Length: 301
Image (cartoon, helix red, strand yellow):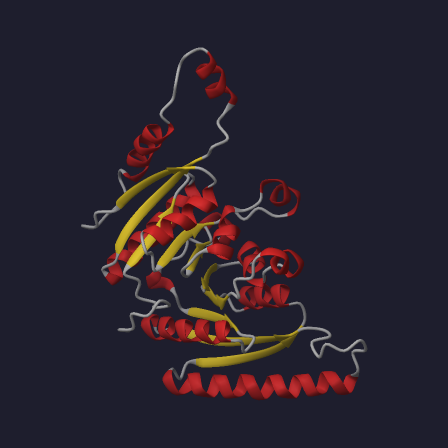
């Protein structure tokens, strides 16, 4: 594909955050593979946290100071040694602060077309206590974000690899953002000669009525079927290997269940980028899919 728009599947600048974990190493390898494939520039960023360990605080009270950025640069250099760079000369960035703020800031300053980031896949109480830098990046990034699910999380031989994308799932809600994500998914399907499935989920009470009547739900289903068929037919003209699924249920559960059942290699979906009170009340389907998906997820702004 030769598209070069802001939502291009051929990014010119890729940013990959690392925290020196095995998860972020797999994200680095995926970013390297993409940079080699598309001839992209690559930047690797590490954020040292402002909340320093108690040992550092005690040491500073004794007159011993630490240059956290210098230590971060040294660790970053060590982390990247042994990785197959393949002629790519990555830009190394080290920042100090709140990780997701610094990552989003680096993406804006470096004019990144794509962020490739790992997820630790925390759920339940641990997720509530620790939060998720990845989900916050997804919610605030100025560009598409590829969230790489690790080998341990996927239970497969390899994490995301451009050469192994054979099945792509693209959830749609017929909004402008989801239609943009479909175009991105279409370009990727053509690039990798992958099967593409468009999924629309009818939520309970989607008709916005106090009473979920059979008649109102039938109307919603008919309208959704027509919209999905129209979108799928248009997409199929560009890529014959396109299918469609219409389901009813909770969007996050339905998306992740279908991805698991069809053994999808990648989910491509849009995000409305809500913030403030709206995000607090409604949450983000994309962020929750990132948390629970059985495969890597590409979230398109």
